[in-house]
Image (cartoon, rainbow, N blue to C red; front, side, top):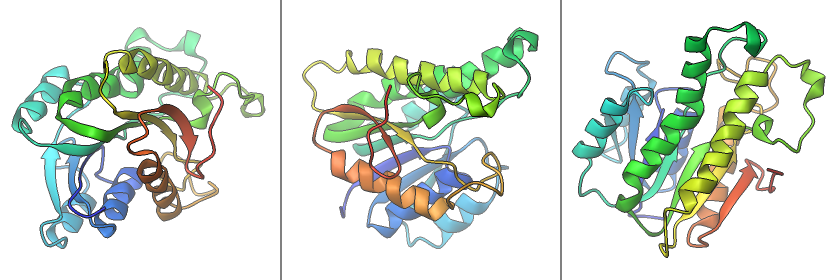
Length: 233
């Protein structure tokens, strides 16, 4: 997919950085975002060695003004992929014991912010392009994760909310043939996933981008794992 351009939001480390590396390795031009210039240097170091294939942007997905400012800087940029990789686990305490601010932050970062950004950039995505959000298998209401003992209920609910909000988002696209994907990366060995997770970042990123490239141009709205399997909503 040479001469394609992707925007990857939340690319300073972990899966987001893995997506940038995977896309660049396939010949894409990539804009990778971080919260600020003081964020982890992994993205900056990779961009510096990419021969111009990767460039940097800054955005705080929890801050609507920051989103609007980045969109303004990217005005006129034609994109083939917008991938919003955003997520915080929040506290593992029962949701009823958490403060309103803690709950609000999880839902703003995991649910509202990604859809706000997708809404803001949809007109810059070429017909046949893809808008993807990083969700989680835990966001599947139909799946049983009782074995986790309820420790991730708030995180799971926020990702279920993200999945649901993408349904509303697709209704705003009208006749435009954009593919909207809710992608689960699997249980990945990152700071969030921990050292005991099943797969590494490279495997997850490869699988996720395989799905993105396979579904581009289909105009569908789907929920998929990194292995390409459709997940129950």
